Image (cartoon, rainbow, N blue to C red; front, top):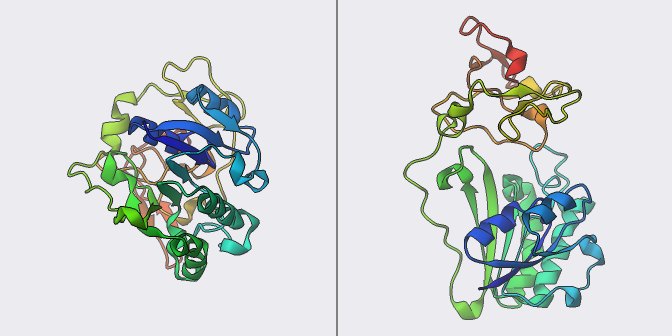
Length: 280
């Protein structure tokens, strides 16, 4: 079984994919203490290093076949300030590449948001990965959508993969699935089984299906209506974001219509009579 180490591991989503593909996650690194209990519960047999990557010497990283990670995306996201490599979080990408350079695994993978491919970031991207091409890695990247591979939401991510030149190969992603899952496939059977969260979105012990509580206690983002938030049952969801303040609406919600050139949307009236707040 090939050994893999993971950086910016979070709750272990990327690690889980590799585990299901037959890899052994022997060591992981995650700095945020609020995430540690979740990762440790998901991967009880994996050693978790809780330091910042900037404090880790490559010699302290176990020898492995592959290195995987998703460096912080806020610096590259089109929804953020887009400071890229000028942001301290963006510079963590360089720390990640430096460890790969020193460890020289048989492969590496980096995952990030589509904004990484924006014209303004292409020079930075080239500078980040050139140290690896300089030492003999074939590096390639592809923008992939999770909905093409069995996930019921449109979630686009840049996947960067490198192999030593001796392998004489570049990363070629698998062909997209012919049938793509929809909201109906994912959550239609759960309709009517949801319960409200307690207080400021705390766990409701009355919930019968884990994590099937709807948000009540927080205000939605002031930018909430600036983009479409509704997909019908026969479509995949929009990207599920980390915070509930930007969550897509329930597919039962009426469609949203663009009202002006600034991409501001409003609900199409007169379709369904119900408490909208329940499904936001």
